[in-house]
Image (tube, rainbow, N blue to C red; front, top):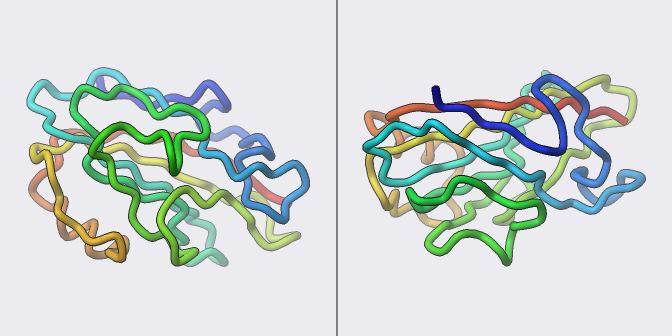
Length: 157
């Protein structure tokens, strides 16, 4: 079974403040540590996406990574942007720049669900430009997904 976990929080539990974007008390804007196991045998690469699905967030993309090598099984805390696995490429987020951009939901808007999904793909290079958005990413992985696993963290301020 393909699974995604974090040592920082469990599925559907609160994300610690240090993973939030600057402007939030205690924020360090570090990506949370992620670890996966049980990927399909024929996996050629992985891709990771983190999206805020709260209605006021309008599917805000906080992290989009492609071409993670097939032999990788984790992304350490704070890997973005300078300690990513060789070949991995971070695409622009809704913040209009590549790399991890942590949660910063509007004050008083309640818990936001930040869903992180890892995709096991049957291709080693998606060949997307850094400016490609979530729509281009979703088009590029159609027919190439061997498996996926998810983890949702909650955050509010």
